[in-house]
Amino acid sequence: MSDIVEWINKPIDDSNASRVLWVNGPAGTGKTALAQSVAEICQRNGQLGASFFFPRTTGAQGSKMASKLVLTLAYQLAVSLPEVGQTIGELVAGNLSILDKSLEIQLQQLIVGPMSSAEKVMVVVIDGLDVCEEVIVQRQVMSLLAAGADDIPSLRFIVTSRNTAWMREGFASDSLHQKAYEICTDRTLPERKDMGVLLREGFTRVLTTLWRSNSIP
Image 1 (spheres, one colour):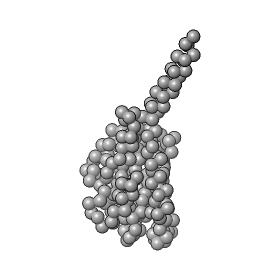
Image 2 (image 1 turned 135 degrees about the vertical axis):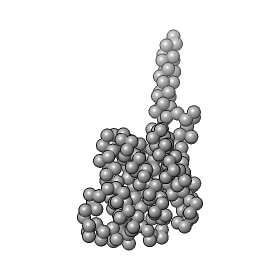
Image 3 (image 1 turned 90 degrees about the vertical axis):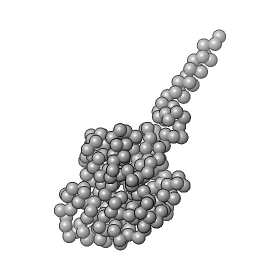
Image 4 (image 1 turned 45 degrees about the vertical axis):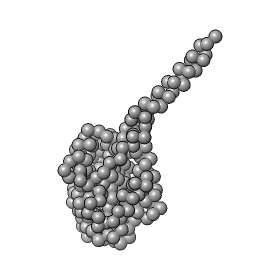
């Protein structure tokens, strides 16, 4: 956790600093718990800009959820940073059609523009990106992350997901590779096993022990 806090607090003008943290690992290895812990620390320090948690039931509804991503982040940033919030509010009031624009246009107008003059590092947490079954949605969000990392030096993005082939390919792309660093939550587990596997094996051992003890005359 100390490494993450140190990363968050790197100077805005540090051109070598990664601006995206990818937390990955199998289901049940603490990705969401880690994201929540970081969000709580940032909240206490006044550094939590916004958070977006894809529910486990997202599935094929990923595109519908993702369509709300930028507006949700912009709203939360507006609440977290009143000076930014005033700018965002004026932009929306003067151009309601922005609510129906593409995610890319919304990002540029509602986040990149208003945050360009921000002097304080803020953190944006996006949890469970992989639960969107539509790969095109995952790629679109990654594209937004790359643009955000390029254009908003005051933001640090934390993204959690399973280490799927599509996610790894996305973070290895030219647009993100140099802007992100990675933490694997499953490294703390023996033989990199999924927590569900460990629990099943543990229950099996307990049941086997009970069966054997009851079988001894």
